[in-house]
Length: 107
Image (cartoon, rainbow, N blue to C red; front, side, top):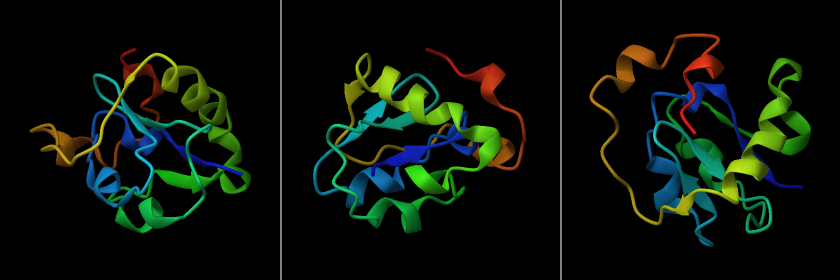
C-alpha cells in the first residue's frame, strides 16, 4: 500500500510533508504535490505533517477522491522530486478550505 496526496493540496502545496519523508518520494508540480507509489515505503510520517489533511493511505482515500491514486502515479512519472521544504504559495491559506479544486490542478 502507498500513500496518496488528494485534492486538498491543490493550490496550497504546503511542503511540511517533504521534510519528514525518509525516502524522498514526493514530486512537485506547479500547484500540487504527489507521492511516487514506487518510492513510498508506507511509513505514515507525512500524514500527520500535512496541515490540510490531504494525505491518505491508498485504502483510505475518500470515495469521491479515488481518482487521485492514479493521478499521483501518473504525475510522479512526470514531475521532479522535491526533497526539502519550501514556502507555501502566498495565497495557500485562502485555498486550504476550498472544495472541488481539481479544476485548478496545473500539470
